Each structure stands twice: as structure tokens, then as C-alpha cells.
Length: 195
Image (cartoon, rainbow, N blue to C red; front, top):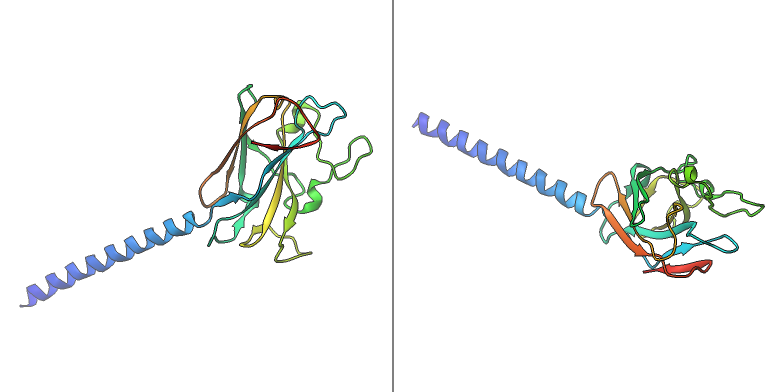
């Protein structure tokens, strides 16, 4: 009788442990799946030169997916590739961090314009250009929260010329990668929707 009781206790204990492990695995999976980004609206290309020969930067509006949890975008890795040999596995966050002021540069007397003209410049920055539905206005933080939309500006390389197909990948610290593939049109305007 004692042996049977000990044996059943061991079996039940192992079952409870297995159940708890499975529950933790499911909770982790749900947490990571619900922490994904999604594109909100169009991806916009901006070419600021008087007679543009390439895109200067792209604006991508992102939000958390429905039911998602807040995401720390300062930990996000942004990568870029295109069909003309442009490649950067880690486009760095602007040194100013995720504050909107980090997206303000001056070029030829123009302010509030994100501009990169040299090959050395394009591959080192992305920034937050705008926060929509900001839950903490005036107190900028690194968390993209549910109901917020952040407009991310990503500088483009010299290879971002007409008819170029490019890929941007946004990899948050937790959650799935958000891949974006677009083709630059055959002619430039200052601002254009990219499909």
C-alpha cells in the first residue's frame, strides 16, 4: 500500500511538472506572437534632391498587432538589402535615441529633413519621425504601446535608384520579424507611395 502511494505521488508530481512546463511554453509562445509589429498605411519614399536620382529615405508607419504588448523599439534591429547589391544587416538607431528630435537634421539650410548624401552615412541611422496617439506626450520613451503608431524613417543607400527592389526587416527583441519588400518606381517625385 505504501509503495503504491509513493509511486502514485511520483507519477502525479511528474504530471504536474510536465503540465506547468507546457503551460510556461504556451505562455511564452503567445507572448512572443502577440508582440509583433505591423505596417499601418503605406510605405512612403522621399527623394529630396532638386533632380533626384535615388530615394533619400523611406517612412514606415508601424504599430503593435491587435492584442499586442508594448515593445521596446530601442532594441530593434533594422536590416536592408536590395537587388543592386546594397546590403546592411544592422542599420543603427540614430545616436539621439528614439526621441523625435533625433530625426532632425540640417542640409543646405533646410531643417526637419533626414538627408544622407554619402555612402558612409546611409548605413548608420534610422529614427522615429513622428508618434501618433502617443500615450505619454512630452515624456518620450522607448515603448511602442498598443494604440500608438510610430513613423520610422530609414535612410536609403546610393543603390536605391529607379526600378530597385529592396527589403527592410524590422526585428524586435521579442516577437516576429516584420519584413517589407517594395520596388522603387521608374521615375521619382518628392514623395511617393512604394508598392
